[in-house]
Amino acid sequence: MSQVAGKSITAGSQIVVYVMFSVITVTYLLLTDIGTDAPFKANLIFYLMLLGSFFFLFVVSFSDIFERKLGGTKGARFFFFTDVTIGTFIIWVPIGILGSFGIALLSQNLGLDQTTASLVSIAGSGIVMMIIFFITKTIMIPIIIHAFFNTIVIALRDGVIQAFGITQELFPIPNVGISIGQFNQFATDVLIQFTLVATGEEMLKMLIIAFVVLSIPNAKFKTGLAKFAGAFFALLIWVSFHLLVSL
Figure 1 (cartoon, rainbow, N blue to C red):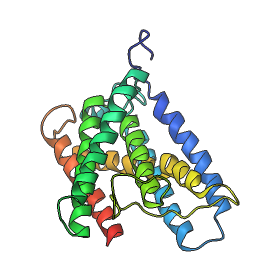
Figure 2 (figure 1 turned 135 degrees about the horizontal axis):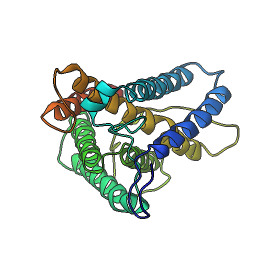
Figure 3 (figure 1 turned 90 degrees about the horizontal axis):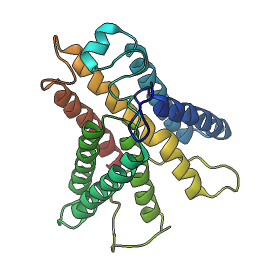
Figure 4 (figure 1 turned 90 degrees about the vertical axis):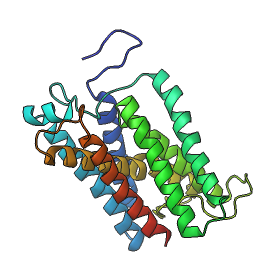
C-alpha cells in the first residue's frame, strides 16, 4: 500500500525487488565460477545465507502471531520490509558509511595489534549499521551502507584508491574470488558486495533478531528489550565470523 508522495511506502517492494535482482545476478556469477573449488564453496555459503534468511523471514511475515510479535501489519509488511524514500537514503547512507569508515580508520591508529584493531573495526561498524536500522526500520539502508563500506575497504586494500596512509587492512572482508573472463576484477568484487555479501550478511542479522524475539515468550519487537537482545546476538555472531576471517 502506497501513501502520499514524499512519504515512505510499507509494502516491502524495494527489498523484494532487490533480493530478486541479487538472486538473478548471483546465480549467473556462480555459474561462471562453477569450475573453482574454495571460491565457489564460499560464495555458495553466502548464497544459502541470503536465500535461507530471506525465506524464513518472508514466511513468518505471513503469520498473524508473528506479525504481532515482530510489528508487521498484513502480508509482507514485516518489521524490516519498510520501503524508504530517496531522501532517507541521502541522509542515512552517507552517515552510515562515514561512521563505519571513521571507526575502522580510528582502530588502525590506536596502536592496537591487527586482531584487536579488526575487532574494534568490526564491532564498531556493526553497531553503527544496527543503530541506523533501528532508526530507519528498513534493511535496505544497512545493505547499501554495508556494500559501499566494503567497496571502499576493497579499493584501499587492492590499491584502486590510496589515501589516509593506511598500512593494514581496515576491515576483514571475505575474498569471494569470482571473476568473469576479462571483466575488471574490482568491478566484479563491487557487484558481489552489493548483491551477495552485504545482502546475505544483513539478512542473517535480521533473521537472528527475529529468532530471538520469537523465542522469548510475550516479547515484541516494538516494545521491551527483546530487539536489543536480538541485535546483540546478531552482532556477536557477525563479529565472530569476521574475526575468524581476519585470523
